[in-house]
Length: 450
Image 1 (tube, rainbow, N blue to C red):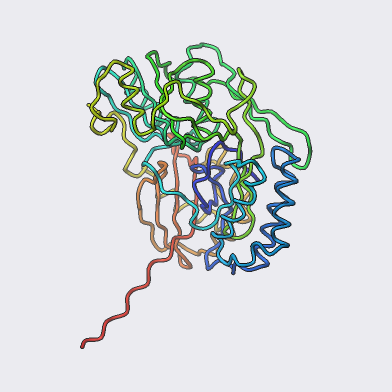
Image 2: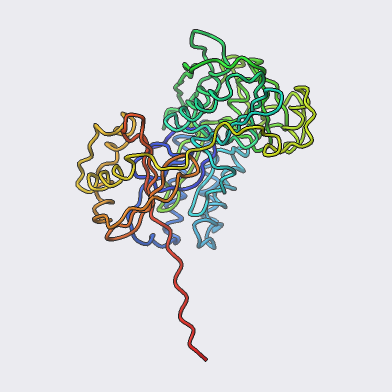
């Protein structure tokens, strides 16, 4: 099974219950130590990756060449010395990108692949501020799944509604969903009727044929009426570029900063081996106005400036005289900050779902339709995983995670897991995930007295 998403994965998370959490999706795994990473595992991973490229890569010809390249590398012994999964993942990624013209949506992810979070956010919305001159500032670092992203964006935009100009900081905006792109763009489209934004043209697996999924503007509480500036950098990627590209094609904003990264494909996730998953491009974006996309070329700014100076330059274009480009120094009022307290009912949901899955009897009425569908598809595996964990001994709230889900440490009889969970306004579970907790450092041996 693959999940289409625009964006770079944030790393391998052993998700048991969700379709998309943040930007990544991986298979669940039972408690206990991982199997050894040996020649058999590497061979199986290469075979799985080759099959996936032949059957799913957006270009059948390139997919065949990529598959043949890594099969030849395996035969030549190029992977023999790679005894650690992360080193193998990096080498396999490099070999695949060499054939796919540096497709940035091609990536093999192993343990430890997750990059550091650039900012804490709620569904990807990091902050909103009021600056001098009735100028608003909105910092978005990802375009998360709608249950996370849309409510957070609505809160931020409501606080910014009366500003005369809005600066959207997309310099660290990378991964996300196409639905998130559509919702963000919709705030800047002044039309009572739905507007066709873009299509995802995806390859039908195992064939040379394609299917098309259309994306349209969505209802938002209001349409923003002020001037719009968008800050970009070489880090702005994929879903972030999709947002920028659409506004630029419709002449709805002025862009300040650097040319973006140039990744326009839609990524899917395929398990390769225990601890390893593959991101590959199963589709491409096709814009409704231009008929093309930004793959390999990026989105070029209207006003070129180093990314670090982009906010200062944008404010100067708006008639201000800022002494700095640092938002903390420029902010007159913080209007939005990510949620920091746990959702009521989340701990009870973690306990209930653990017990239900161990019995193989989830209560689908207490899930969103999408969550229920994902759970039904995985119920046999979930029953084994949670029965292996055993009964719950304790549940401890850890934090609101970097993307806005509640994080809990759950100690079971046979292991400890980290849960991430989000409830909707109706109290139903809309997103949930679980992964084995990292091992705690061993206690230092006592020092004998001299």
